[in-house]
Image 1: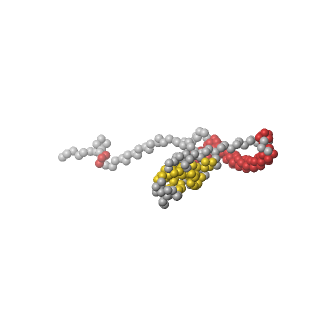
Image 2 (image 1 turned 90 degrees about the vertical axis):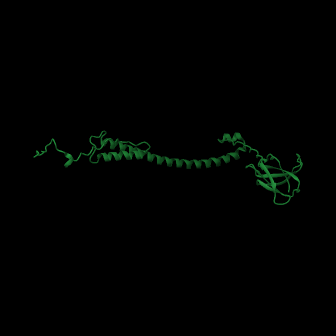
Image 3 (image 1 turned 30 degrees about the vertical axis):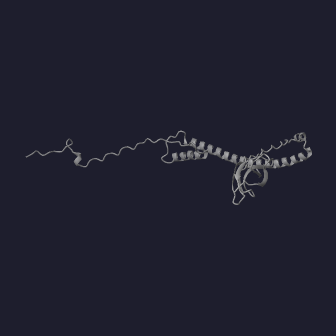
Length: 236
């Protein structure tokens, strides 16, 4: 008969019996405090300062703070008082600037009106104007001459003997003169046909089958500008 097997600490097989529950691993505690103040406005920075002081005193309180809570509270109060003073000063400054602009507007009205009196008193003498504390107005600069029309194009019109003309006019031109010449074109062969304030027109009454030449020039306050390059077409 086999010898019975005995159980002791040397041959205990925990794989077949209730094993001890393993301890949970310790949670890693490596977080760092972030200040995160950059870019915040002064009031928003102060809000974070005050919030930290309040929560650090809430149970469980942070032990042995350095600086002390009292020092932090006093510093935050000083910041708040300074910000309040700045807000008040800025409101006062805004009102002062508004009053300044109103006073300057009134001063300009008075200065302009008095300048009219000086103008009458001076009879146009620049020495008198400057002697009374005013600058002499400069003569107005002459306007540049009107530019010559560009890209004059002629096409056949809708009716016999008509020609449609279009061009790129100078923006400063008030009106445009359209002149027509029979062929052959000479320096003295052009005659006035029409005046228009547009950049196109229809030339009527031209001899069918004949060749004509057209040129255009703009006019402004200085008078007429240069002629465009002439264009030609056979009238149909």
